[in-house]
Length: 324
Image (cartoon, rainbow, N blue to C red; front, side):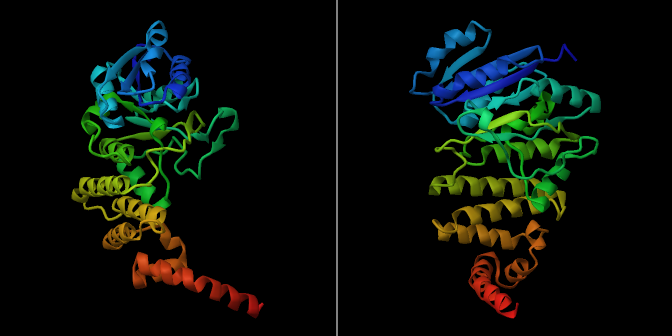
């Protein structure tokens, strides 16, 4: 296993304040050999000033014209020569044993891809907190990537970008990152990775740290971001439709719901569009576990059903309180 090379690709845009910490976490990996690639995506914060220090530690550094995170990751892939690929955003951190433990598990179980739980933090990983509930932690289960996507939809969860370690051969099957998607570009990309993954395993230990920042691209705070994420859901749906698996469609169904939920107050018209597509997909949903809410959704549709259900909740509460 020691002969296997792992490439860690770190795109950076105006993240100089965080980048050194991310690179250090890559350099401190207990597994060797590593190839660390930093791609400065046209930053205007003098990120390249850090390059001499990085290069003295054999980090490969590149500066490109600004084209977005997906473009920077694609450039990193074009330079990477590793047998395995780890994507690491410039403001996130890897635990020292992440690569070692994931790679050992993948080699032992002949897996294409491995994921791990992660911790959220803002300033210091000493204050990191566990992310929301996590499914499928037992690495002994033999799962395909498609089975994992079904679980995303039916069990309502997801996996962060930095959690993955992927065989390069699987990366090549998935293709390049879509530079036209600025929101949920990671979700769309790893949907393609999972689509072709024959064996997925989990290293059940918190081995990654995701930094929450005020200006995260994941925030749906503009029409452009909302449209981009919506288009990514359509692309995921198009990818899996030929499988003729109704359960697999629960995954994009969940994505439409999550967009509706996040934007319904500030962008009602776009929320209606997401809700309409949720209703359109006749597939199982994690919402069915909420018996009464699910009844209203099926009766009136997601958009109107939620409004009716929300309106009636205080009345039901009053009736139950009076009855007791």
